[in-house]
Image (cartoon, rainbow, N blue to C red; front, side, top):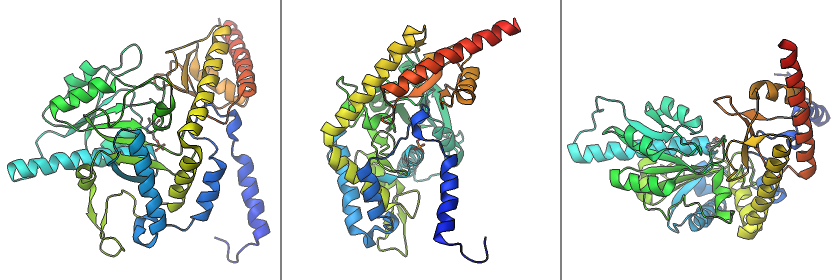
Length: 398
Ligand code: PLP
């Protein structure tokens, strides 16, 4: 640390240098984040000091948080949903599984009068397409995460899920908008499975939660299905809020209460959250952008992203590349030769940021609101050139 403080000018020069090294989103097709909406940035700044960890001091911000839960509960089929703003999908998933684990522990305690650990490790059953945050869940909570195979459309096989359930299973997870394919699992059927096995069902809609409700087709994924007990959705992805903002919703207080801890020295005496201090700025940003856009605004944004996605897929087909599945939302996996080498070439030679699927078989692209037709045309042009480069280098090797 410097002995004496620097001048503001010096600081801003340092900041400017750091900023120059950051990539602008315009050439990023790998991220599920984007520029926050202008109103979100303004609201964020206005509430920059607000701490939701001690919300008794910040009642106005807390009221906005309650209204976000009400608005989202409303579009997810449950006006009485309970929840709070997290730092994003990872925290929401950790907390949802922690609630399942505690729910099962409390049930054992009630049924057996003892909460001795069962001999076998407890487990949850998730789709093989689950985000890597569930590997953190496993590590943190000491729970086994059983991964069920996908079918040819990249949806989880419900049969495979059922076959992995045993007496140590504490809950199920399904995904509404998978990270790699943007696919929606057959959640109606999984909900029935959860009900029949008397297990809680968490829906990871970190990406899809601000997309699916605004698509014309109907993908049922929410509390209107009787088995769904919790939902994770991220304003800092397609909600156009500021980072960090996720939302974790529970069907009712009974589930969130599994997360209660005593908070001895705050203005409120209980806390349900994972982090203590929490950003009230992200609450204000989410509230502002949701109020400004409304259903109509989000429908326009989603519709624009879907049009761009279809345009990208058509342009890719024109140069001989097909998607692994027809896009359900604005995430596309393209079936390309040598995806890893192609990604490196697109980055080094052409300055694009793309990713590949975990099986390394496809190029993964997310068509976020910062993209437009001109950018997609440029990208497809460079993709064609990068494929030719690779062909030539493969021929050279041959
Ligand atoms: N769940 C899904 C489906 C995701 O796609 C992601 C991130 O891309 C996450 C969870 C984790 O979200 P975060 O990075 O905000 O913690």
